[in-house]
Amino acid sequence: MSAVPSATVNQNATLEARLARFPAQQIWLASQRAVSYRDVDSAESEAVPLVLLHGIGSGAASWVQQLEVLGEMRRVLAWDAPGYGASTPVDADSPAASDYATVLKEWLDALGIERCVLLGHSLGAIIAGAFAVANPQRVAGLLLLSPAGGYGASAAEVRETKRDQRLAMLKELGPQGLAEKRSTNMLSTHASDEARAWVRWNMSRVIPNGYAQATHLLANADLASDLSRYKGRISVAVGAEDTITPPEVCERLALAAGTKLQVVPCAGHAGYIEAPAAYTAIIDTFCRASDGQRSQ
Image (cartoon, rainbow, N blue to C red; front, side, top):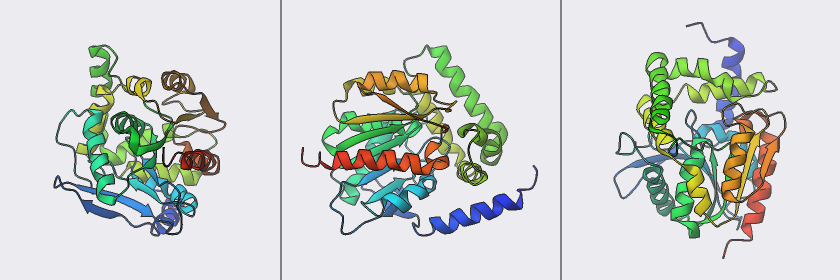
């Protein structure tokens, strides 16, 4: 494998230095499992906390730009999903969204967060949707960015093919190779070199077993079904140049949720990384509207 360019090393070092403001923490839950996360707490704020759920090839660190800006106004927490970072994997080899949602509930309970704005990106949207349906009173607003719908409603052969292709790629390439091969797909042609380096850095740190479990989750899940049953505040946004969960796919999920799709120009799948100002404004606007739902 070729050496990492020095410019990439410098870009990563700069982002890691910024990330050091939000060091990884770990909490042990009553179920004897750990969850690692990053947290910024605006002590003076009465706003509803914001909880950020990352996608399949990422982690809590990917949200550093949102932690920096939104953390000035409210408590913001970004978890490492089970099987990511220092978080204990779920028990099932082929888990359902409810397995992750159960851990999410236990984590929020342990932190004393009774109600939050819940944001899910890509695979994180599947977990967010499952949690919101099971615990609607805990969610002041559900915001989905480039949501992955899952293949649970597809024919068995489609589910198995999609699952097995991704597992084979993981086995062949490993996390570092996966990052080199797949990270470019996460961004639009407008992305900066810094954004590309950051997506690659996060993807290179996935843990094979956790990624494999998440691959099964993607195959098993049916987000549209959950969204059709959720009656709370919800918004869906996607980058105009997202080739992983394209606007036409997200449009169907928005319809299932009974909401209008918001399309962000000049952004790809990991839009919150490459176009942080636009996405942070979307998140902030949604959170401020959700603050009024606090006691409802």
